[in-house]
Image (cartoon, rainbow over all chains, first blue to last red; front, side, top):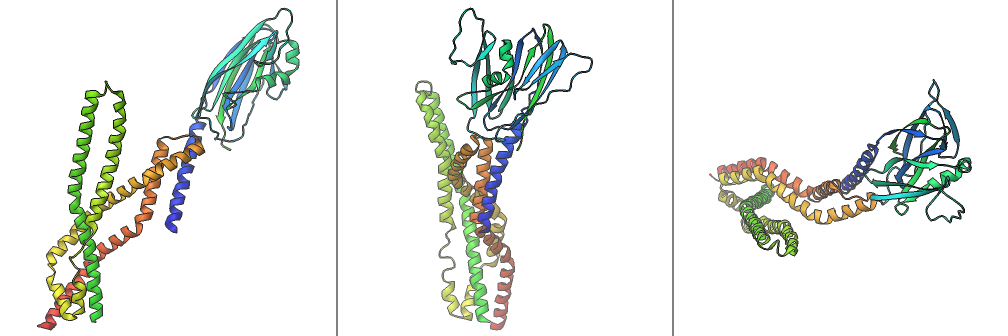
Length: 214
Length: 218
């Protein structure tokens, strides 16, 4: 009886060690990013977080306007106006969380995602469109590779100029950017969107993320 | 008094049978090693020659290495287990002790007189010294047999829970197999160690009794 209990204990311990080992690996994946972007009026960049489903992670983003002024749209749809000044504004810090610390059944996913910017409005490919007259067309595309060993990644994407009506409806913009890829195995989440409010605006963006142990 | 002596002699018989069993298995190890090494070298040589001769012409020969792997795993396992199993059975050496004990004091004396004490001591010391080697081989056989079942089961479970089969899963299944092997063989190992390590005092006791009998007789 005692020996059976010891064998069961060893078995449970081995599973726990495997689990902890996977979490340690997943937690040491932080690859911080840093970018300066030059924005003309209405130009927009989005910081998209790609993550495997069933993953809990935390993203810290710091936005600083070096010159000019910019509008920052957070992933809940709220807007913040940031202007260049002598005193740098406090960093905008965002924490995103997903369901579990580690799990799911996707081991690797290599794919890309696409959005369309038509006349300053953002669309998902395949959306029913009715566009008349002249239109400008831009494809917003990014490729990514996620695996169990690298379950979260951030991508800074140039969305192109956005129209005033699109910017007014920030929730719609966030909805379009909130998407899935790899057959739903990968969740795309916009951490924030930064839009230039005057020509020659320079914004510095830095971000880091960690898988959070629940 | 007589029943006490008979009980001690019977204990000595059981212990000496264990000692003989261990010694027989130790004797067998050399032969096993030579046979296993010969088969392994022969299998690898034949497979390598076939591969170098026809490997490029017939790439399907690659499957042969799976067969070679299976031979290298299963042959030593089955052969060693069979030979050690056979060698462990001690028959005939102390079979007549029961009959002699029924004869009473004379029978006991006959038993004790028939023993070559120096030889017994040598066999006991040999068994005590080399038993750990046999134990390691025995446990390794158990672990190998258990791994056949434990490794695939653990890999499937790992894949279901974590979607991963890596070195960690292999190491874990070996650890699990070791734990199960120890759990299965623990009683036997402990008993053998107890028998071997309590044999000295038993031997001295029986020898003392033997001398006492001799004194009484004279």
